[in-house]
Image (cartoon, rainbow, N blue to C red; front, side, top):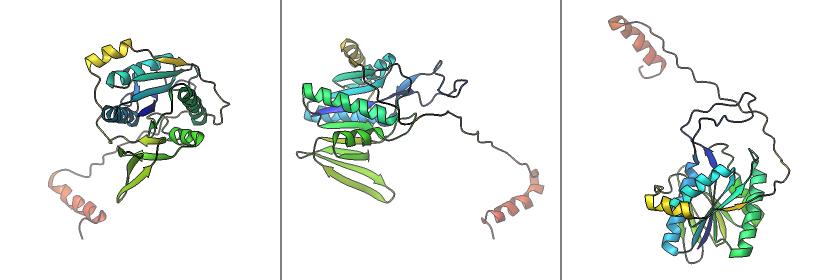
Length: 255
């Protein structure tokens, strides 16, 4: 089994975000970085598959040189190879990102053979576009199953399951294929000390992707309006009882 997992370097989801003065970007001065929870589960799923079936699992990201940190983390967990599409451009729109991944996929497959499975997180933790996997599948003319909470590799292909309001949908397709993974499909492992030492010695392949013309333009980032909490005191002690009863009646908790 030959797997490619695509991840994205994003600000730590537990951080408090501040915007630059012009509202065009996030101020990353005091932010930590990680990969999205969905993508972390995609990495774990790929490692679990090759542990059972054998093969290679390559992790890929598009971003600045600092994104090598997230690739090394994935290598420490058990991924076998890593590719960094290095760019100093701060943001790529979904069509640009997908095209860069399509081009590197074709290039790697021409040299090393076809990827049986391309895996993405359902959506990234920062932009949440949920478009890249679908665009890549379309560009490579491969079937895609989105939002998986269960994935099984069979002799003839894969079976994927995803949650719906009243149950679960089950899909089956042949390989090569593309899937997007949702958080909760597994419990990602932590990198071991031995894994971190091995990851430091592994080479990350660097490539400079071509950037096609931008099709979408980001106008401005804005913080959502703060949710205000208000408390209204009606009375205290026994004298508050009639007002409490009245409120319960308004809420139709009492008749």
